[in-house]
Length: 428
Image 1 (cartoon, one colour):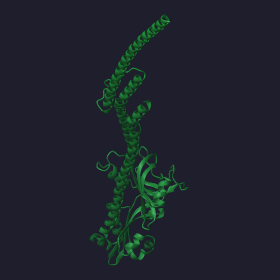
Image 2 (cartoon, helix red, strand yellow):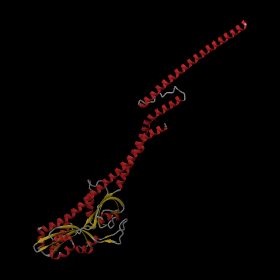
Image 3 (cartoon, helix red, strand yellow):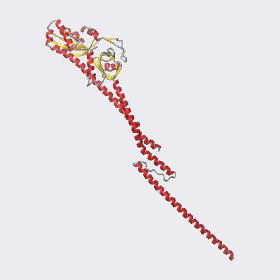
Image 4 (cartoon, one colour):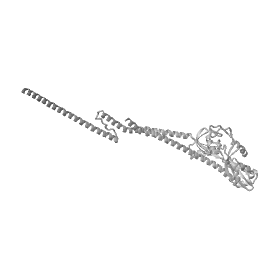
């Protein structure tokens, strides 16, 4: 019976103690994977917004230059003297939010076209806007102070690719050129925006993505522009209000994005904490990967929410277990308790107690019916035993009576025999 009891207990508790934890583990694993996919999908959507803003900035810069070259005012200024042109370009540069704006006559544009595909396209009559990397001497030649603004001292960063460089002095530039087709004034109008330390650009991306009530929610997000693996514009903080300019991306991200050209969609360590991150490569007018655009949000709040969900699920499982085990044990007891009573009854009968019965086992199912039938069989056995005993007593009584009669007959026979012997003796 112990084996039956154990088997019944196993059948009752196995779904709760073994199967349910396995299902819970599988469910939590699947939920965790789906949760991570949702976070990755969110950061990928954020990256698309940032990418679209950069594309809009580039397209807007190109459109602004085309609007200038197509304007009547431009043709009038170009017909005037050099001083008027310089004043006009300075005014337009400030009005359009450009960092440099200048005109290249066709006669002087050859070396520039050979160096820059953007200018070569404009020389061929096609407006063009691309990202390009300018050396410091070119920046300084375009506008005083531009090279100093582009200069970013490097900060030693954990997990970055080792380097002996101490400063990033190149500039990442939105480089636009539009053809000028004026009679006697053919050439190229060139303008651009320096993205190094361009906090308005990066803060606008962050505002669009993470400070927007629709797209941002409660996420603590950051955005960064990299020149190769160096942060040249970012709202990531080292501490308080000090931006992490000059810090570098990890070697793993650099390898995936800059070396392999893949978009990174995964968690990454950003300066001093883990972020759900998205990095995409930025290519220049030559098709080379020269930088990265990054957006990401702090992982810690979502990790905490995930842990809280795990705790809640485990607590709910424990509560279900505590409530269910007594019920299942009670149901199992309804099976093995009547079986144990029937076993004890049969054991008592085997020891000679024919009056032992199961009685009411508290079950109205098949087990209760079997217990009732067993009692009926025991009643029949006891009744037959009683009859057999009565017949045995009656038989013994008859045997005793017949034995007494035989003894009496033998005694008479012996007496008669003695009388005959005496008669014969007397006769002789």
